[in-house]
Image 1 (cartoon, protein in one colour):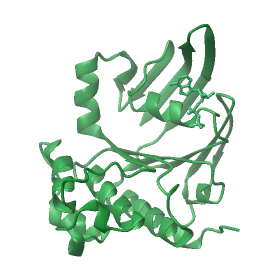
Image 2 (cartoon, helix red, strand yellow; image 1 turned 135 degrees about the vertical axis):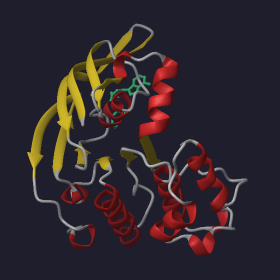
Image 3 (cartoon, helix red, strand yellow; image 1 turned 180 degrees about the vertical axis):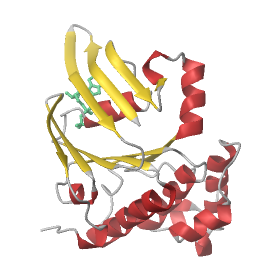
Length: 231
Ligand code: ADP
């Protein structure tokens, strides 16, 4: 469960201040798929960074599973993030000099009780590529590796920042199907950023941001990724 109470985040550069989040409150339940939707600059990445403890806030509170992440010191936060949170980004952030298997091993080493690496590679469908280097893989395959690296340590919550932003439509659907499958299999909470309204259909809850504020929270019946309408 993620609980956010009345948070405000201001970026200062020189004399200029940008209020990236203005009095934002929300709750996300364990096992929910939540999409953060909104135009560029609306505060989605800032909210994700604050939820995951990457960024500090001036006001308000963020609790994850009753732990006050916004009040932890740096080392407490690092430990908490390592044990509980997984991340996937638009750019896959794989280590180019390591093989697929070695990249996933790095994720596994972050946990005292990781999943079996072979099982995870089977689930995400990259077992046959395990000895290859990232540059030898397609974008979709690289994203599968980054998903494997994120989930092998059994995160409670998976934060996904435009995970299909660099992929074509068919591959995007594939990756979103995988994310839904992980959610169903492991009850992992998913918080996914997108500016693509079609992708919002995979969620149980859609939170729309504009100019640093939540302008809409909609609960809905999630659609299978394979059935979403790309228009
Ligand atoms: P989104 O993810 O919806 O595109 P962001 O959270 O990245 O939006 O940005 C929200 C606002 O905060 C924007 O006005 C952006 O320019 C500003 N912002 C984001 N990060 C920084 C930063 N590190 N320094 C200054 N301003 C920032």
